[in-house]
Image (tube, rainbow, N blue to C red; front, top):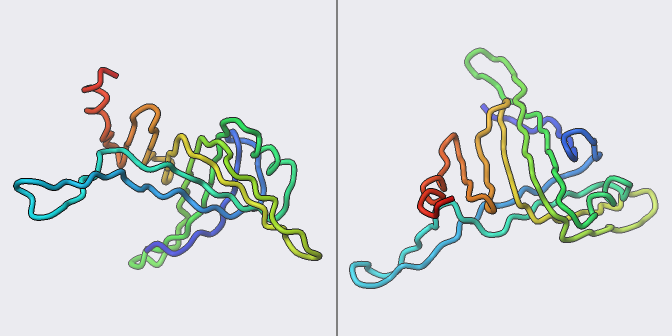
Length: 169
């Protein structure tokens, strides 16, 4: 039984701890085409295999510091979100910690320095255009989305493999 995120940490380049943050994950919104015509009673949406709208990651930090400034450098950043999730086995009654890691290659597109007020966090944030996203659960890759290299792998199946083959890639 899934229960909760216990905590998480933000890293750059797999080693540099970036501090306390909250994250708004990208949404995978599939590209679609409307299909109508002879043989179709009205309109239907055709979901285009492995193709998604632009992905955005949002990181909100309590304060502006050297790490948040570095994330605004106009270049590719490799950002890791390492999450400890709590699960419970209702049969045995044991509580377990599940490791989830999201790896993003992203480029900053919005740097919001937040609000400055006495005795309060300034809640600055950054929005990042995601070029690559991989998700690992307990060390096993369960999702990889890499639009520039035509990769859309979910649970071990690369749905764009036949597309790469058809395109000679």
